[in-house]
Image (cartoon, rainbow, N blue to C red; front, side):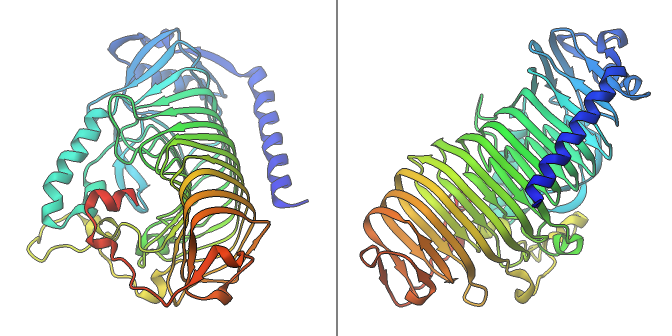
Length: 480
């Protein structure tokens, strides 16, 4: 039995155990603890008291229909937070309502405001139902953009994402056997929407994410799987303003210190409508990715890239045994992009000499990483059954000469694009059953590095000077 079959069987056993336990669990209504769904009463304590009561032996917390204003709440071991249709959890716009806690954020361990709804160091906890969790996040988006305006001229673009404290919508942190889904609508997150970090055996099944309502929130990722293992994500419908379905594993020196991979992950049967990419690996690659499969994903709408790998020469890490298949892309500009020098103004932290007083995590971010430890190594990647129509460019692939992107197998690709693009810094790439309708050929530096491209579909050129992404505007780098 392979790891996918074992994992699927384990998920089934875990769900059966949870269902059996639910038969004898207590049901608790937040109304019994004074919660009011009027949209204005602050309900944090009432909801938390209900959760704590249900945790005594395990149980379900329910809500009468209404809108419940709240700060951070923490779902405990054995508890299901049940949000039925007609129920909305509305996030407070006051940062003080989100207690600062130890976590990992954007690849480094630091203290950060808790999410609106948390499963933090728990087991067998769930957040389910057809209700809504609304972060009401525009006030946090605006605070970020205001800080960016101040920081960019000072050479501090890289610090903005860490200094502008913004609550995530849901975090599963250092937990096991968690469930999220059942038709939940997740909207207007202040920062990342669903962050699964240092966790194991987590199932996300049936979520709709809408973060571009009332504006386009910066870094409002959809689902981030971060140094976690045995994760299943399915039946997600995502519209966000950054990565939609994203694998992460730590940033630079701190990520290499932690050295926890993201592994044994399945992402399937989902649609991405608005995002930076359909599926993303990185840019936090330090701990590495192993045994990740993404399939049956539809990518359409305002999405610039279908399949995206991104890292930087200080990240480190690896990607191996990655399987991406059965993707349908409609009018997505770039089918496959691999960039190992992503967003320099964000990726490479340097504290200006004139600044002497700064938070400790700045020093962590600016800790040098030797080049031999900083370059990520991606190898043994399989991509198959990809249908892309209306693309601008088929391939935008660029690595490093000393660490070529190795042993990529691409089978049954049907791509219609204006340009072939380029495959640089690659080794042992194999194409089979390729249908490539392009107006201009794919550029290669080494014809021996790629097999299976029809002769008329590529040209070999001497290595060209690479464009320096640091010369692009901040906006252009963010979009890469």
